[in-house]
Every structure is written in structure tokens, then in C-alpha cells.
Amino acid sequence: MGNDEQGTHLDKMIDNILDTKYENIPPAAVNHAKDRLLDTIGCTICGANDTGNPELLDIVRDWGGKPEARILVHGDKVPAPMAAMVNCIMARSFDFEPVSPVVDGQQIPGHISGTTTMTALTLGDMQNVNGKELLVSLLVGDNTATRVLLAGKGSGTRRGYDHVGQANSFGATAIAGRLMGLNHSQMKHAFGLILDHLGGAQRMISDTAIGFKLSQGNSARDGVFCVYLARAGWSGVDDALLSQGGYYDMFTDGIKDPELLTKDLGKKYYSDGTFKPYPCCRMNHSAVNCAVDIVNEHEIKGDDIEEVILYMSPGALHDVIGQPFRIKNSPHASAGFSVRYNVANVLVRGSSRPEHFTEEAIIDTAISDFLKKVTMADLTEGNMESGRVKVIMKDGREFDRFTEIAKGDPRNPISREELLAKYWMNIEFSHTISKKNAEKVLKMVEDLENLDSVKKLVDLLIA
Image (tube, rainbow, N blue to C red):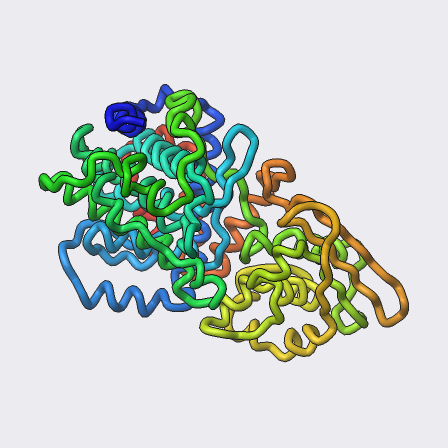
């Protein structure tokens, strides 16, 4: 493929980013964006004071700098790249935000919304845009990140990279470039510059480090920074995606088909499709579903259980989620990525809620004692994310439940009522934003296209 042809794909994407109007976007995509924004706002509030975040905030405060953009909940006004970074990290903290971009009914791995929604909200507040522009900027960013992921072989996880730190960087750059008024040439250079900032390590997850959520924020910080550079006259590589030494050449196993970057561009706006009902790794959700169903249907108690057999796919069993539960570098991350902890938690406590992922809850001896009853086995049905739980009671009764597709997936969606219940659960857990303001936020997001200033929304999100 020659340079001219390579450039046309990126040029078309940039035209879509800069020229899309609210009226161009299908109503279903707009409504879905509102739901994702509300869901991520709740997750950000929930994660505002999670492990490492107060310390991160102290570092950013100590650095100081131009007071440009606000950090949600806490209210500090700091340089825009840093505000976007902190807001995105808070959003990812309980691993609870929307995931799994959907393209023509098929899902691809991704954690896009935690970066795109908070980047759009942070800069939308700074630039004082209206609700329609917030929605458009969010959707072109989602669409950019999803298409970048979709077109790559290996989803950007080559040699242990975390694609959250890659595709999201392009999405954040698209959002920041639009909201900060870049022209076509500047936008192209911003993409060329972000190539120098791509990263993220999958090892953060397998070592259950606090740093698992860092690339969610780094991608936002660096995207905003590169937009500032491009606006100031900096140039980047000509084609960040398709050139030799570009994204697909360096970070993936190549590109499946360049046309995936532009097919139906301007007609379809792709984004995350799954809303998580439980505050943990999505790979755990099917097994957690099984445990929740067993508890709800049979009203059993952990003390009455003799044994639990947890069936997961071979791939999941050999991943970090299937390993024996032990606290490594972070209690929260260790619990959030452990299917054994998550199932034990439901069978002991009856549900899966944010308060079950505090250090106090994680080190509770009731959980550590119960985990001795849990064994793992190969699942011979379903898919990589399917799960099965068999509970054997002390009185001899047995309960067996299989879940192929966990709740929250578009094929097994959560209801509107469940989505709102999740929002309120996050608000109540955080003890920061008042119920009165949270109610106003809900109504404002539902009517976002008629909001004249995003500042009014962010005002309500400061404790």
C-alpha cells in the first residue's frame, strides 16, 4: 500500500472526528452514549478515594500548574492533561465501567469508556461546550478507538502490551483535538505525536498491581498533551496507523484490513457494549452470575456449604483470575482479578458490591476460611468467558448453575432499572456527592442534548 493510499484512511477518520454533527448520529448511539456516560460517572465517584488515588491526587496537587480543568469529586483545578488522567484512573478503579466495544454485533476486547467519557467530560467542562458537543466528541472518540482496535491483528497485546494504553490514546486524542479546535493538519500531527506515547503493560494485571488502572489515565493525559503540542505547531509522523514504524507495524501483528478503519464511517459510531453488574474483572462475571443466582434462588448461607466446585475455561484457569487467591501487590486488585475471591464473596455475603473490595472486606477471615472449600475444574462447554458453579451443601443438597453469557452483555443485557440501581449503589458507597446532586446529574444526563453548558453538570460532581 502506497503512502497516498495509507494517508487517505487517516484523513477520512480525521474528517469524521472534526466534521461530525449531532444530527449525523443515529439516536440509538446517542442514547447508548448517555447510558455509558452516566454509568462511568457513577464508577468515577465510586473510585474517587480508592487505593492509591488520594496519593495520586497529592502528587498532582504538589506539582501545581495552570488551573485549567477540574478533577471530579475533589474539585481541584489543575493542568488539563493531569485532570483528565486522574478522572480516568478514578473511573477504572473498581473495574466497573463499560467495556467490550461492539462492531456489527461482534465484541472485541477493550476498556474504552473509562478513558473516553472522562476525557470528554473533563475537556467539555474546560471548554464550556454544550451537551450536544459533549456527546459528539465522546462518540467520535469511542468510534476512533474502536476502529483502531478492530483493524489490528492481536488487538494490540503484542509482546505483553496492554491495548488500553494504545487504542484509548487515539480515542482521547480525537476527543481533545475536536474540543480544543484543531484543524485537519493539526489533528493529523496530534495522531503522529501520540505514537510516541503508546504503552501499557498487561503484566500489571497478572501481578495485581495498583498500576493496572494507570494506562486508563495515561492514554488521556498523553492524548491531551499531544493536542497541545500539535496546536502549538509541533509535527508528528505522517501516518500514525499504517506507515512502516506506525501503530500496526510496531504494536500489533499487522492490520487485518485497512478498510475496517473507514467502513460505514459517518453512518456507524462504535463503542463499548457491555455494562458490568459486578465490580470486578469481566472474566469473572459468568461465575459470579452463577453464584448470585444460586444464592437468590435457594437462600443458602456460606456456613451451610460443604464444598464449591468452580468450572472455568482452560484459558481462564491458567490466567491470573484462575489462580489460588492470595494478596500480592494490592488487596483490591488481587480480589478484583480473582474468580475464587469473587465467588466466595457472593456465597458468604450474598451479593457483589463495591464495599466487598475494600481491604477490610478482603482480609476478612470469613472469606479466607471459606476459600478452603473452593476447588477449580475445567469447563467443557461455553466460551472463554463462560462459567459454572456447583455448590454442595452439608445436608447433601447440590446446586449447579451454568452461565454462558454473563449479564451485562448486549446478548444478556441489564435492564434500565438495574443500570440505575448500580448508579445509586456507587453514589451511596462513595459518601461524597449528595443524593440531591446525584439526582440532578441523572436528570441532566438523560436530557444532555438540551444542556447549554457542561460546566453545570460538572458543578454537581464536586463534593
